[in-house]
Image (cartoon, rainbow, N blue to C red; front, top):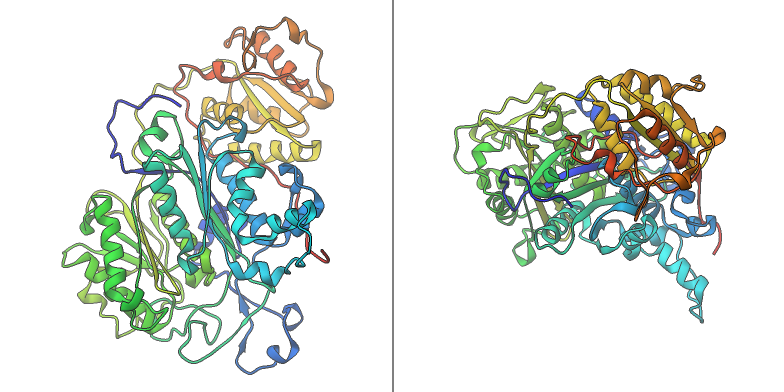
Length: 595
């Protein structure tokens, strides 16, 4: 890793440098944010023949056909991870989703698993019930290799160790079971490990697939599930939430090191805290205001954050009057008396109740709000609950999308998760620090851009997605793009490379109808005397990073399957990692039919 930068950063700050999200109505983090900022509700109402439950249950007058369904919950691309089809079918849907999401977060952060320095920690939450609903392996008399393979694939305990193993990393793997606060607990444990120096980077997240999928729920008076299928946070007519599924993962690193390593920073975790109500609970599983307040206050204290500087509060927001009232009371106690105002909202109105990943949806919303400097609206809130005296608190319900202009001059958000069994979790996030000024990109300098995939079809999709990204974001610098591609992606068998001098040349080279020119591919690789090129410990090294012919020879050698050390191409540069399209998984349906 790089040496620490000259600028001082709080040693307790942890950077979010990569993210991945799949939620109802959203296959990517970009779609998720677009849905939120435009106030879309992704909970849908099912047709009778879609619902995979007993006929008697469907015809119950209190059965609500609402669900936050997850597109692709049963699909997977095992080839990327070297997993057999038999093993893929044995894995629970949460195991499959989590390993893919962890891979995406790593790529989004610009890191190739084969070149990750140091120890990687993976911390995640899932629903222990999912494994049993998916199908319990037989209790064999002999525990042979097949029994062990099935058990490790299926077990909720091994979700994080599977991700560590199949992505190709070493470090820590901890699967937490803390009900609906699971995502927050995973992030808290990840931050603790990073700050203690036990790991160098960490992936934290949660995965939830409600089975059978899709399905609705039975409404019961006073319980947490909605009477009409809509979640209405803080609304007088709220009756709870609908059930939903999803996966969220975040790639984390100490902020000072992230800046030194030229990482892209979405947001900063200033503080985190967890606790449990224990015997002080008003009722087992119900929020206890004093304990929740203590959790929120502890997270702010850990981060050295004063309540006046927190201008967004993303609530647990279950949409049930009693729980929303208790939560607002708790956060009001934690914030104390102040003159500033704080936006309050709840993402469950958009995507429903995601169980162990519910806090992840809230954290993703806050991260994207900080990144885009925009406050997304809380939907389904038309008449605030009169029992919540908002005027006597700092909190103002966020009813419309708005530019985020904080009174304190800095953007900070608090995100709460509450889990059955008394679990509380709170995160305090802050906007990313401003980048240091850097010189304009050198005009006309030749650069090498590389892509690889398992097959030509996936490679073509990568080219198309990268071209679309470049066209959509004219602010992307060519040096940043090449730095992220060359050092931040695992090298696979089918390869493409181009030597270009501008963004425009790269866009043209990526075009499907581009023939010849600066690009070379595995399918039509030119011959090159690779043995005559300079060699280093990590493979062929660039002979002259600024020379077109030398770069073209390097590209041809790499496309022909030779190992290349791209690091010297970017030594001494001011380029940064930037988020680029991640691997285009070729998803196929996998479902266990027999053991």
